[in-house]
Structure formats: C-alpha cells, structure tokens
Image 1: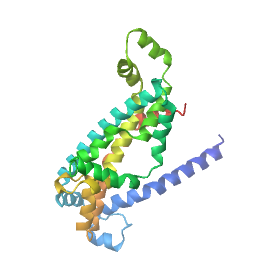
Image 2: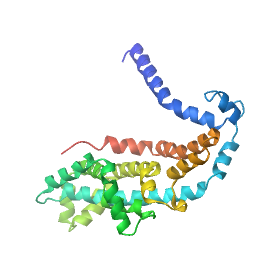
Image 3: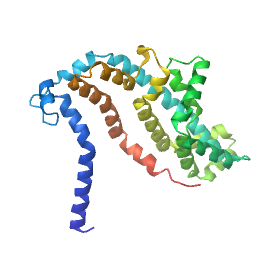
Image 4: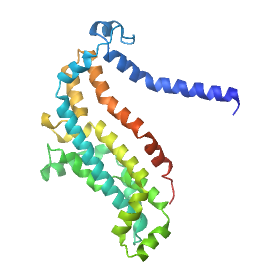
Length: 272
C-alpha cells in the first residue's frame, strides 16, 4: 500500500472511530459536570471534575442489588445457552440421523421470527408453570437453545476432522465421550464467543425483565436504570453518571476478551 493510500485509510478509520466514540465521550463528560454547567452547555469540557456524581447516582438507587441480580442472570443465561446450544449443535453436526437437514433448516427458520411474536405465548407459558416474577423466567428459556448460537457452534464443529472422532470411537467413546473429550476442548474459542454474546445480551436486556418481573428486589440494572430515569428525569448529571456505570463493565469485558472474541469469530466459518 502506498503512503498516500495508507494515510487516507487511517484518516477514514480515525474519523469513523471518532463518530462512534463521540456519544460515549459526551456521556462521560456530562457525568462529571455540575448541574449548572450541564444546563448551560452539555457539550463543554468539565471545568471541575465532580466524581461525587457517581456516588450520588449509586446512593440514589439500590445499585448493588441490581448488580447482583444482573450477574445472576448473566451467569445463569451463559451456562444455559452454552450447554444447550453446544449439545444441539453437536447433534445436528456429528450425529447422522434421518431428517437432520430438515431439522437444521427448521431451527434456522426460527431466526426469522421476531421476539414480539413469541412474547405473548411465552409469557402465558412462564406464568402457567409458576416462574413469573422470578429470575428463572429469564434464565430457564436459555436452556432450550438459541437458533443463532446453535448455527454458530455447528459451523465451528464442522471444521473438526472426522478422523479425530473416528479415533475416539475406536477407543470406545460414545457420543457423550466424543463431545466432552474431543469436541469441547477444541471448541473453546467458539464457545467463549457464544458466552460473550449471551452475557452482553443479558446485561442489556430490558424487554425480558419488563415482561416477567414485577418485584423491585429482582430488577436487573437495565430495568433499574429505566426506573432511575423516571425518578430523576430532571437531574441529568446523575442520569449520565448512572449510564456510565452501566456501560463501563461491558466495555472492559470486550477489551479483556477481545483476542478470544476475534479468534472465535475468525475460526467460525460457513462450511456446510
């Protein structure tokens, strides 16, 4: 690449990064301003860093309670999704049975259904089995699999050589042994990617808690932040501080797991 082309490419990338980072920078800047300065010009640089805004935001709502509920939901949903989706993906990829392709097509077809279509029947089912207003109303469905994650893992499992599984079968391993001793150890990048996707999805989930939870002691951060907005709509500095506290953990998680995340995406092909 010529020097001029390289400079132009980096300039475009920096510009795009700045556009995407601007809302975050404005939010962080506003969270450190006084109410008076924020009212005058919300896009100005803080003249005095008011770190007390974060303490005030935490004290204005049960942050630790919301955080513990969110972490319970994230861990439970990650376990349910990775366990169920990896098992289904192995069955659709490595077990030969009649109707396997039709079943895989049916699973993929469910990706076309918007969440709103399933909202009412799922709510009725959750209520009838007695899980309404409990965290299990959100965690439980993840143990039934997710079409996108099943597809993602299946595409990775296809790349595992059949010779390894045949060698395991010669050693007397059944499908459970093959899955646990050969497939899982080779699939950690893809499984970790699924776990990260599910963690972020659960962390940001607002519709699920809104639909299934009514007890404030069980609210996660996403729903708790919405109630915080309703109660402190006139205190923008506290709203911005609470938003920063909600967003920073996900950003840190991405940077800490960036290498594994990229490896999992890069090694998950589109093989049939």
